[in-house]
Each structure stands twice: as structure tokens, then as C-alpha cells.
Image 1 (spheres, rainbow, N blue to C red):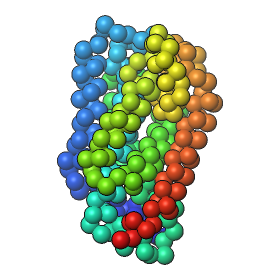
Image 2: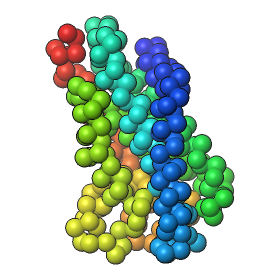
Image 3: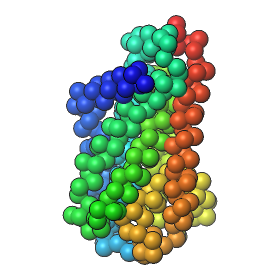
Length: 257
């Protein structure tokens, strides 16, 4: 476990020392939120919310977690180029331990960055009570771990940061757009509604809405049941960790050279 802690600490420290990554991971989602909240302030008001900024708030938390996971897991590619990854791979540390240390570091950063924005909830009308705050924190932690594990798995098989960014735009951004962060599934085209239903991040965003508003609130009408959201979100996190561990074990020959 000492190796896992060391890798976790290295990931957190390395990211925090890179101010451009810290600013980008928080700044981009906040800019998105300000632009969409301002442009659609009254023209698009989902049921149960006073304005679009309130509706978009839980989605912005998920967006911050996603963007931080993307920017922090790029270090996997950089570590390979710098030779650090090769030295870790030939050490006695098990492959799942390498994956866990890197993922936990990225997940910690994702959660911390999301919590910076979390404190603005009362300012936009989002209900904020201790029980809901704790529940939202736990959901955010699971979402952050899942996205960090997914980012790790994708970064591990990439040879360049350019290729990683390409995959991000092709795969991760649609996952966010179809998660219900920007618009509810109700009223969408049947194909889009189906894609939203099979998007695992949909259930994480829905779980956040449940934690903020509670069961029975107009904002949560039409969402999957709370227990379904929790099961799928936890299952997504576990599946992504298993995927990251398997990918880490399968690329031994290439990464040891």
C-alpha cells in the first residue's frame, strides 16, 4: 500500500504544481456554466428549477470532475515518455496497485476541484442542507473515481497527448453531453433519449440531483430511481477500475521498453 500512497501523492502534487492544468480543469467548466446560464437564463427553464443556471449546476460538477480527470491522467503518457512509468513497471508493485495509485490521485484532484465550485450552490438557488451535501459529496467521489479510472485506461493505450485529446472529443465529451447535464431526457429525440439511457454518467448526474433536491421534487421527475442511479454509478466505477487494471497488465512488453 505504500507504493499506492506514493503514486497517489505524486499525482496530486504534480497536478497542483502545474497551475495551467489547475486553472483549465476548473476554469473551462465554470466558463461553460456562466455562458449557458446567462444565454439560457429564462428561455429554457426545466421543471422544478428557477433558471437554467440552477438546472446546470449538478452537471457542472460532473463536468469539472470529467475535465480534471482528463487533464490529470495525461501524466500517464508523460510518465511513459520520461521513463518514470518503465521504472515503476519493473518494480515489485502489482499492476493493480499502479493503476489504483494513479486513479486515486486523479480522483482526489477531480473531487477537490468540484468542491471548489460546490460552495456556490446556495447562490444559484440549489438546495443546500447537511444531509444533501454529504450525499452529493459521496456521489461526486464515486463519479470522480469512475472518470479517473476511465481516463487512466484511455491514456494508457495512447502514444501521444494529441491522440488522447482526440479520443476525449470523440468519446468523453459526448458522454458528458448525453448525461443529462445540459438538458433532460424528457422531450429529446427517441434516439438521443436511448443514448442517454445507456450513458453511465447519466445516472451519476441524476444521483446528484436526487441528493440536492430529494425524491419527489419536480426536478427529479422522469429520472431513473435513486437506487438504480446508485447501483449503476458504483458499478461504473468498479468496472472502470477493473478495465484500468486489465489494460495496465496487458501492455507489459511495450511499456517496459
